[in-house]
Length: 226
Image 1 (cartoon, rainbow, N blue to C red):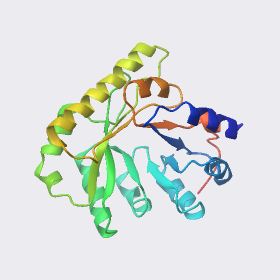
Image 2 (image 1 turned 90 degrees about the horizontal axis):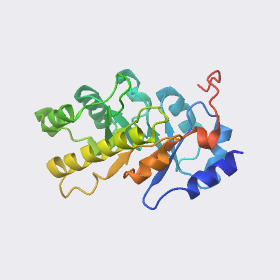
Image 3 (image 1 turned 90 degrees about the vertical axis):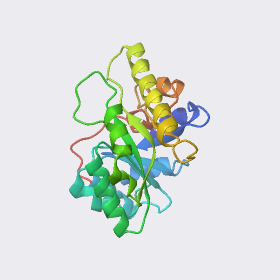
Image 4 (image 1 turned 60 degrees about the horizontal axis):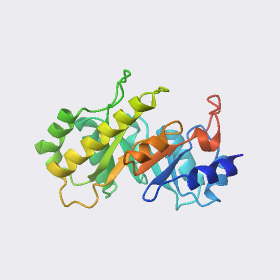
């Protein structure tokens, strides 16, 4: 089932869109099944689980951290993470920068925005992001790089609402690109779209889709992986 699911999702991707196979709560064996089909980008939302999988899976996997990142957990991923999707404050970015400096790395990051109508604790608005990017503290950071934006739409059957929310993130990306990243080729990522809504996200400009259950099936929350 995983093999067929993966092939269907991979075949549905638009040109220029990369798949992040969301492997949280999935076993090493399940991940290896998708890896053997050619997938190299995997997303996790628990730092210690990600560390445990990184230790035993092939070294050419590109690990993306896609969940809320607690500052005391940065140490578990900073040495190898390829992209952090979920920067939602200047303070978190400062901590990532500090940890990356110790590893002599520049870590690519995305700014997470709150675009959904439903309540959520995490995500910037445009004014907050502009203040972050304008701040002297950000200007002094040498070990992080902002590569784009991330957001999650409301979990709703209303496809037009989902489309509006994704379009709002694309507009935010374009405003930031024009104001802060003009001519910066690395600022190019729009991470939006999950199993239920990634086709709409691609139509609205997503470059990274985070798909888990449509590949691996339902999660087993009881599984202890680390």
